Image 1 (cartoon, rainbow, N blue to C red):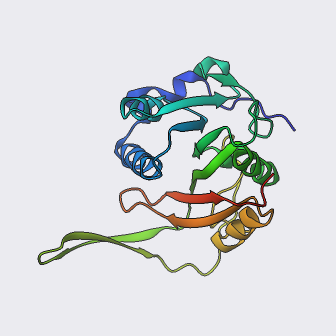
Image 2: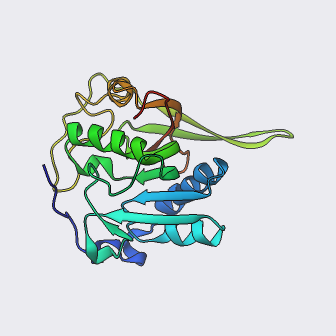
Length: 214
């Protein structure tokens, strides 16, 4: 299955797309990827290009790939057929991308990201589970954010909205089920997953490549 682009370049207009929650997610993208100390990075789905620009500013070599040539990626290719050799990049990342393809295709794309990664794969995905946010001040420690999931008797159904085929914690895509599916092929191991306090709608996954991959 080959996907067509869902939105035009105007969708990523800076002043309408980069609202405060996305800025917070961008900070976490930079923080997570830079903490892995990569020399080379591949980003699937560059969007606004902000992550690429800032990573380059931090001195890391980053290349981009997308199905849409209008976004001017370094390579135009499908996520399940990347034009790179095995172990081509230290870290491969895809932020808010895999939900834009059917779930089985997203799993194949994750395996392909792992194939071309040398060490780590970092992704983020929409998590629909709503939470209460509490900001608590501890003496000498400062402020700490706490996310408390709201009670939920059953997961809501997901309806394709023209962009998202699925979201975490929608019916059939509960976090435990999605995580299990991600790890089923043995291509990656989960290092950690978290939701930023500032934007809990974006859930991050940090994977390490396994020796079984390839």
